[in-house]
Image (cartoon, rainbow, N blue to C red; front, side, top):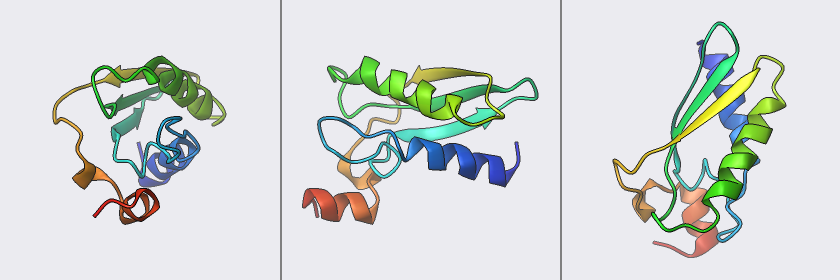
Length: 102
């Protein structure tokens, strides 16, 4: 997968907002990686802010929907991982400012 496609996929994921925090999952640092194979199968490795996140299924569905809007993507597989565990240091400067986190 080329850099432009990775940027397109990450750009699409910036439209997926964590409903509890009101910030997109990319700036929150929840997306660990994306890939796309020759057949149009997209993969997303990501985490959630907590293991018991009640919004997990909704966020996964939103990820699938956002990537499905890219013409190159035929199918999406979201893998939720817990290692490394998410913490506030993974957030972008924008997210930290928006949430008042230092």
